[in-house]
Amino acid sequence: MTVAATTTSDATPLLNGQLIGITYHAIAAVRDRILAVTGLTFPQSVALKAVVDGLDRSDAVDRLAATLKITGSEAGGLLAALADAGLIDGARTTPTEKGETLHRGFTDEVAGLTERLYGDLPAADREIAARALAHVTARANAELATR
Image: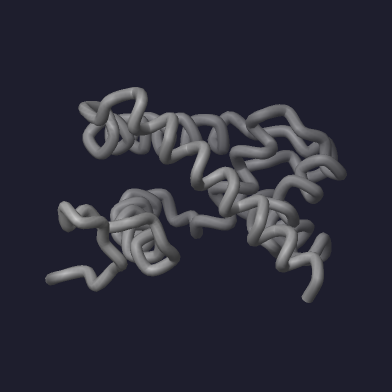
């Protein structure tokens, strides 16, 4: 499949929304296959990470809303689903042993994937890409705030 994108004179695609989207969907497809084994959705995995990271309920809801672009109520629903599944203690918003084990397994799989996808790319290239994506994300968030 050929990706149509604006190019430089040496035919290297320039960073644009289409290229970011295609890359995102390719990575997300692999991630979702890894997640399928756990029974978690991507939003649930983000919620579990927030709890494993030690965030209290309020901070976890804030992180989920900001990261996933969802409402606080939807974020609370993700935490409730994790509690119903026995992955977090809903009253204390702490991971259960089952939740920590599931998270650790998923994290280990993703670490391996990350190494296979990015590991041999020069650090300078990764730094430039990270800076560009951070700027685009900030601009997109600013646009979202006006709509």
